[in-house]
Structures are given as C-alpha cells and as structure tokens.
Image (cartoon, rainbow, N blue to C red; front, side, top):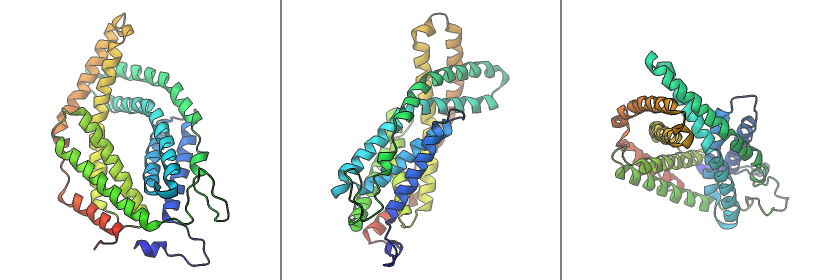
Length: 318
C-alpha cells in the first residue's frame, strides 16, 4: 500500500506523505495559535488544540530525526515542547473550570454555593496565569517551524531546514517500526505495573505513554499504512478516562495549594472551607469511577493489531 501511494509520475514533483502531514499540522498550529491570541474570544479550546497539535508535530518529526535531519528535528521538537509546557498552567485552570461548570449543572441545591466559590477562585487564579500564557503565546515563533519544509529542489538547503530531496524513506519506515514497538512496550509495561489509583505518578506516566503511542500510530497511518481502528478507538477512550481521573487529582492538589496559602489562613477561612467541601464532593464522584478505570485492561486484539502495523512498516505484514 505504501509503495503505491508513494509512486509519482515523472511529470509531477514528488511529494512525500510525511511532508504533507507536516504541512497540515503546521497549518493547524498556525490557526490555533492565532485563535489563542484573540482576546475577544474564549481561548480555552484554542490553547488546548494548539497543545495537542504540538504533540502531533513532534510525532511527525520523530520519524525524521536521523541522518542530516537529526539536529533540525531535535531543535524543533524542543521548541514545540517548551511552547506546550508554557501553556500547561492555564490549560489546567481551563480544565478545572470546565469540571466545575459540569458539576454545577448536576449539583444539588445545597452544593451549589460551595461549587460557585470554587469556580470563582479558580477563575481568579486563571486570570493571574493569563499574563504568563500571553507571553508564551506572543513569544512563540512559528516561522522557524514552518521553514523546516523546503519546497523547491532548486533552493539551497537552509541550515534549519529538513533535508527531504534525497530522503531515505526505507530508513524512516524502519525507524517508525522501532519507535512504534518501543512505545507499545512502554505503554504495556506501565499498564502491567499500575493496579489501582494509589500510584498517581504511575497514572501520569501512563497517560503520557498513551498519548505518545496514539499520536505515533496516527502519524504512521497518515503515511498510508493500514489503520488499527479498534486499537485506536480503545486507546483514545482509555486516554480520556485516565485523563479525567488525573485532572481531578490535579484539581485536588491545586485546592490544597490554595487553602495552604498564607492569605487563605488569614481572613479567608470560610472560603477555604467551601473550597474543601466542594472538592470533597467532586472526589467522591472520581473515586466511584476508579473500579471502571483501574486496572487498565487492553482488549485482546490491541497488541496484535499494533504489531501488524509494525510488520507493515517493515514490509513483513500479512
């Protein structure tokens, strides 16, 4: 399948599928970055999508990080990682606020005042974090990322551009196969070690491993390889369930930080009590879901279907 998709007529300039994927993700990042800078709109969704797109771009670049492209891909991945990390605090507040909004819609009358206090305090903290997020957004330069892809073969390759004219596609496929195998092994090892919700750091690492595996699979299927639809659906669903649990864990940590601040202990005791009561209600709902989330149990076909994709990359698939 891959060779068929890669075949081009001599009259048409040959465009690698990985270049098309890169360009699409760069354009998506440009759109979400621009929207996140628009102070006239609610930027929560744009910030979230911009962060997700950086992960997709990193998965693309990971397949190109060898030979003459090693330094360029590594530098671009670090830029994307720094940008995403710079927006992590405001992303967390956006998630916390959304959790409160959903809880308010379902809350009993007696719980609404405490949830409203928690929501208001989180918005205050979000407003305080917005200045740093704005600096991250304004300081991020997309042009060096976009300049990695040099379209014209007659153009002299720039220092910070990817070498794609004499690109070794076979080597990229071998690298993709190795990376996919490694990501799968890492994910399954974390699954086997994690038995319950007492290991918060293990859950955090499992969530990261699920994202890395998912985005790598999606990049590979963008190149024309068969898509393991069932495995991807399960991975996406499980990532969401783990993420929901982890977001509430982080909310608990944030509330404990807020009530532990000096100003919370002087003159804001009633507010602190309301924050703790509201959070306790939310955590009861989280704990009720634990048995449906942990331990994580991949379906029987999960590892097998991803292993078939590895075989396709190596040219040994059925």
